Image 1 (cartoon, one colour):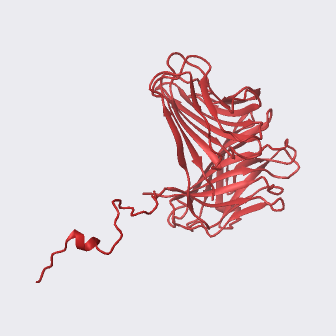
Image 2 (cartoon, one colour; image 1 turned 90 degrees about the vertical axis):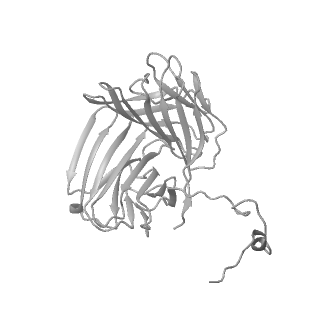
Image 3 (cartoon, rainbow over the protein chains, first blue to last red; image 1 turned 120 degrees about the vertical axis):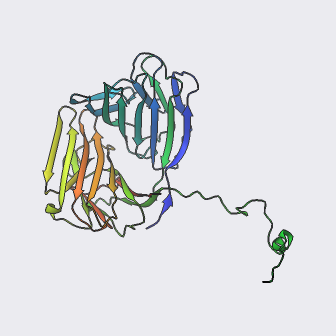
Length: 165
Length: 198
């Protein structure tokens, strides 16, 4: 079997001040999968975090499995305008997310696994998504944003490339 | 004891001179996450097998982009280490949803059903995905624990699984078979990665 190095950081963006969006552009097609790790907080209030690929506002859908501190629930959304990362709203306490995008440069529709983990000492949630973007185009850009307010300073996203043998 | 004095200039004499310890060689950074092998579906087999897996890593991870050609919207991945198909050697647990209902199940002495794929009646280009971790796979002193997050979304249907599996064997794992109903389509790609400890 061949062995080779993989799992390489492509870019990290850590906000020095509040911002409405965090953008990764000119993503090379040299990897097999992408993984984004996110430590996110909102400036004020609560909101949902979303992501759009290649500037597209159509063709997204999701299925989720959610656990609060008291109960489990699930649901789905069809024909969405973006990827959804939050079933529990992003807050001023940091929430951790991972987002795996399989075959992001491939010619099939894109399937994504997301985990969302938060705990605020009395509330919080664990949540998982499987999502789809109905596009056969390679993903070359990702824009993260919130449904309200802004990302707080210190919010950080690292994008990794995972390369198969 | 006789001693000799060695001057830097005499050591360098006759050797190529470099101001860098790399001496012109490419920079190499050892990694802890390595690609071992990648296999694709053929369209004519229910099984994809990784064989001769070295025991040089601490853990394994499989990343599955998969689809079955069976006449259904979705299918299930069953994982057999070391070619062992004896159900009594396995157990499994699952927390899952079909987008409407949350289900928690567990099965003693049952094969490890650890993932989902899209299948033949799903719309074209829709794929299932799985991240499967095999913890301490080369141990000869403990049973092996598997963990996966898997799912497919079909814009109105689909499901999502969080699973664990137990392989009750003290033998190091050197082979992993992933089996589905129907055949793995040619769009299927499965990567096997090794994770090293310090």
